[in-house]
Length: 183
Image (cartoon, rainbow, N blue to C red):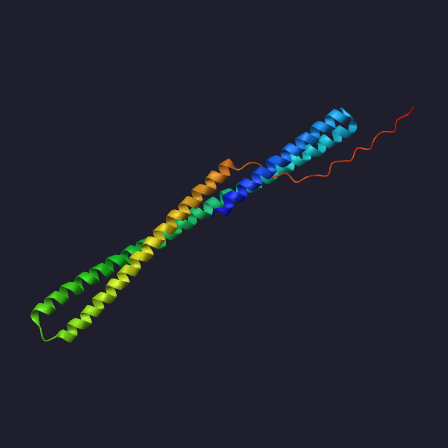
């Protein structure tokens, strides 16, 4: 996930560089040619370019908003589907372990001649404890995933709030042909 913010920073710096270059060119054109027809045509080209940039920014903002909404829906859906079931299964397993342990204690006290049965129950308890540990591990991984998705959503919001204009696509400047000088 660290690639995405780095990419955005790179895009932002490139867009700033392109805007500065464009402004320098515009300044040179105005100084060199004055308010002539060629300069007015160049200004019209830059005006059209700015309109296209604004349109592209509007589309990108809508895309980021859609991405944020999709992430929120995914997190909500995962929470509703998986967490309650995980907790229920863990509770069921804990109850099974408690019941088997109680049964084991009663059986152990009541019958010393049923060691094979106690061994089987011991294996079942061990198996249930292993399964409980696995469920507990999966639940913690799920909670970490949920926290990561929430942080990703916050990062997307932060990036969208601080996202500068995308870099403008360079338009070919009309080549000014020098006017012939008459002597």
